[in-house]
Image (cartoon, rainbow, N blue to C red; front, side, top):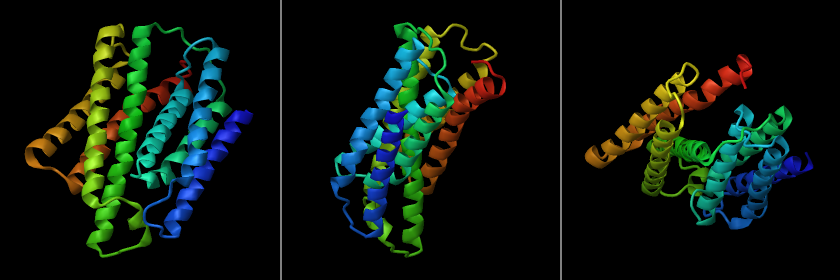
Length: 262
């Protein structure tokens, strides 16, 4: 539990440094926030590794999966921020990662499943896809907020913490493209390796995941073919992400927390 608390505090310290930089209107945010953020990501990963050893397998129950997605989002944010782009994303991501880690530790570990390499590949593709596309959803919200402020000529200090509008939009679509590839790999490995993918307890997850995949694919096609951008891109991104959240965490919440089918 000590590791969990240290990781959570480091996440919050990184977020605090970023908030301070935005409030002070520093423009390009210095890399000082990485000092607590990187150890927090490493400790977060160690917590899961120790949990898997304790439970005897890969623990992917609701809070464990939520924490792993939070870990992926924090790692991606640190990677983006280390290159000097989108450090402000950590203001949201790092507290979310800390909360998901605390929820995982508070709920406790369940008996892990001894998954073979094929199901592990499917699970990791899914978690990476959710983390990447969740970051894309946050980028879409930031894009919408930035566009709205510029249209209203509200030139506030926090705008300087974000990259230019065109760069932010380009980063959004690159992130969606990576997430779409990972989501495609998730669906393909599911079809190849998961037995009875349309069983009663999986059918909702499968159908919603396919609908999300179609929505993200349509957005990328619309961007390439028709130049979709701005509010259209934001709406499609958030709608597709909502379907993905319902597909995975919605179904896991109902099955594991409401129906107690772990």
